[in-house]
Image (tube, rainbow, N blue to C red):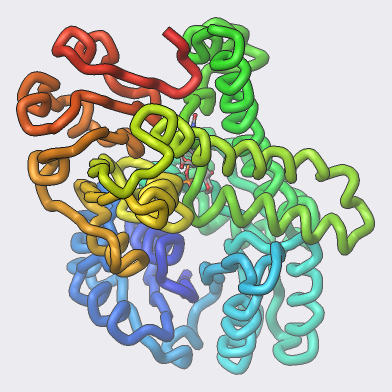
Length: 434
Ligand code: UDX
């Protein structure tokens, strides 16, 4: 069986390397020539632990190639659509331009019996609409949906050993083809869920909405803890022991960002409104609001502690990416806070182990430091905003000698507060009053 992967960004690059590692002949197609050049040399255009070595090893086997030419995918049996669906510029809905153009571009090359498999996160109803388009432009082909649930930082693991496989199909043939593709993964005992097209699309946005809700729930509890004199980290630990609740995704802090959770809950609300089911998802508006408020709360703490007027203050920001082990700065809470403080007149210096270049592209006016020691030098406050391991390993006494004032805000509740306090620091952690 030969596979094509259309769109070689984060999802597509991972999927193509992983499918090749299962033994398939894989061609990755992307319209970006420089991306194709890099991937063809076995190099990643972004940072993802483990994917770099997997990609390089798969290129060497000769099974994995990349191209800008859709014709190269003509002999593939299965075509995975892995293009992005970002938030539209003019509203909450998802922008489907890339999905539609991928389908249009591949349609003339689909061979008899080819199966197009959407992996991109789309508004419910998209798969059915695309299937109808294909039924006239390429009636010899079929379409299925197969949402992905991979987390950045764990992309390879989540693709090769996912906790479930979900396929949206309208006939047994499509399901059987996908069973053949995923056989090695199914053989590991991975749960297999067959759904109709709309349910398969909904599974993805429902999962992300639930995760976003968990995070905003604990951040709402953090607000209440701050008001009532409690400690949200103890609260999270205590409720997390209840298996019905579970301890994961209850890390209170500056909230969620990235290329998925924020835009997916917004697109879900927009789609529900179109369907006349907007009331059902009204709560997601609050989830989004709590999430954005977490960023504001850090700024409020800075102002309350330093001054309303921040023009005389230097603030060191530790972390630019939306989460550790990634260089992704899309909708990063850390960078958003940095940019807002800079706009308020503070002198800002940002450090990140992997995200400085992408962050600089997004916010060229911010100052960046390659070393933590340069970032914190002479600062009036340090804001720990992305929980990289490197930051947990910092020696508070050494850092204390470089700063102007030993004031730390832990926006991720991930640092050892006692260690910093023992070294003479004032520490403010979100959702913890003492
Ligand atoms: C998410 C989903 O987890 C994944 O299944 C889906 O396929 C894509 O979207 P990802 O964007 O990689 O994955 O990030 P995730 O690990 O879910 O974290 C999202 C954000 O939530 C990060 O900014 C993270 O810092 C934040 N977060 C996570 C918290 O603030 N608290 C938590 O307890 C967990």
